[in-house]
Length: 293
Image 1 (tube, rainbow, N blue to C red):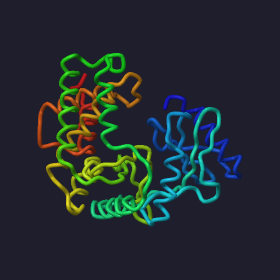
Image 2 (image 1 turned 135 degrees about the vertical axis):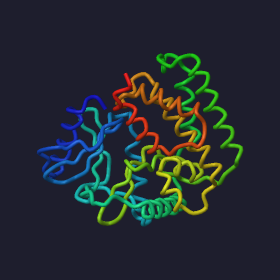
Image 3 (image 1 turned 90 degrees about the horizontal axis):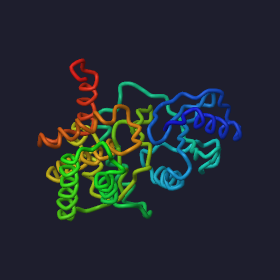
Image 4 (image 1 turned 90 degrees about the vertical axis):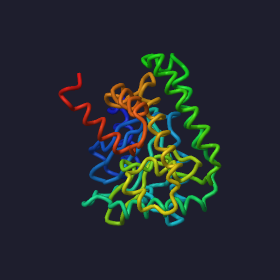
């Protein structure tokens, strides 16, 4: 999000109007949505431009998952659980948890994700399929106006890879259920109550291996009943989708083009397919290397 100052002002204004003192805001994460710790009230705020969020869906689903006993970050209990709008921003308020160390172990991470999936199987809500996200990535790649810096050869290669993975995973006919959508480490809070998931913005239906493609290898090793072949295809798919989004016009990811180039390189190199966190560490290393110009 580019307009951080206005977004912070909207969040602090909403909190103050609800009787939560918010004299300061600490930016915890900034992407398409801004995550803030509001102080001294110690509330966790998520802010996005109105119309570019699914905040209402996220609030309703989070409430149902918490009620079902899932390891989800609950909404802020001191205010009504709803979406607040201010100055063109949608603001939701959640419970803030002080981070604990050491961070969540792979065993606890896997158990929490398994518990979340179990709860999601019991919640019946309309949601997109994971294939809708593939289609979104394919549309970015197919339209030069949306990805003008993507070279023609790379466009053909990435388009073909997305299409072939789309078909291959569909043809497997795997059991599908409600998923988190992006349960990567950045969306897991390490708390004294154990790991808690946040951010249901990309919630979708699909095989659990699609969720597992976003988590570290060690977590997958402790998750039961994984189809390794499907997991490998999903890991490759996630790399291809993220590559597409890094080339989208207006992408705000730091050094996104270099990440886009690195992801295309990984796809061309072939298996074994790394996990998303491994990819990020590897590409972060490339970006900070003095050999890279």
